[in-house]
Image (cartoon, rainbow, N blue to C red):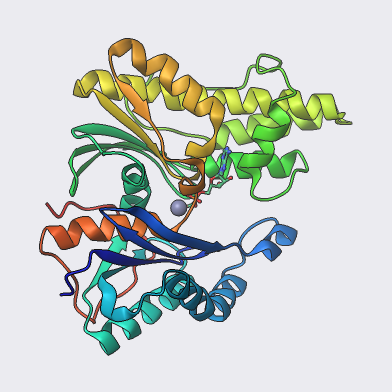
Length: 338
Ligand code: KG4
Ligand code: ZN
């Protein structure tokens, strides 16, 4: 293993191709993400287009990351790559590329679970304090996870149907807004009244730490159909009220989980962590319990390779890496390794 501390990271689980260099001493050295904008016109990610674009982008992206800092593979301590969950074709491009680099250089490779990457985005610009509660909110996941220490995870509850990000995306589509819908809902909600419509908060009093967002999506659709013609003002009011319903239930269940665990630290992880109303509401509900709520810098909330490199660093520190038979997995829970 090289004496230098640089970890190279790759993330290609969905539609963003990302490559990064991370070092524990310097933090994120470079992080470059190529977004695939053409999915917008289909209203969602088209898997076949995503993998073809990863194929075109990954080599020049890797070269530009290494050239920017004048490093070669000989300077790299380890390679971290997302190997699941995600779109198989997309994952295969990143994984095959990372394996080829590892094979040709002898640098150890670490397969990172995408959700562990999102959790570790919180360690990119500060220390990650454990034990902690983490609210994972992305396009594919809504989970409450007890992180006993880095590498030791317990799933406390999760969505029974749509993920929070998926709910934002579907509601945006109903309102005629563009994809991805989360940032669009947040933008138009800023002009709306969050109390204009009383949308359902499913499973609020269930006593469980599970979520359900499919009923909200249906309630929004029925409301929009009953309104008929949507003025910009009504779009903003529906968006603000729907956003309020989502962040409200996320914050209530997080508060309940933090109370049960007695933890002093709570982190938000995943693309929806970029939402300012969610951050505000989480702080409002958890800080009175003496729980400090933190979230990643906005640029590291959505998919990026820096968080994958950071997660890989922790595996390497524990003396763990993978063989070159490492494979992708489309679905599967985050499991403990420490
Ligand atoms: O973590 P991520 O980049 O990809 C997945 O792993 O799924 O999350 C993407 C999700 C999308 O559903 C997107 O609409 C949502 O995160 N998102 C937001 C915001 N920014 C991204 N949702 C609400 N408010 C935002 N500002
Ligand atoms: Zn993600």
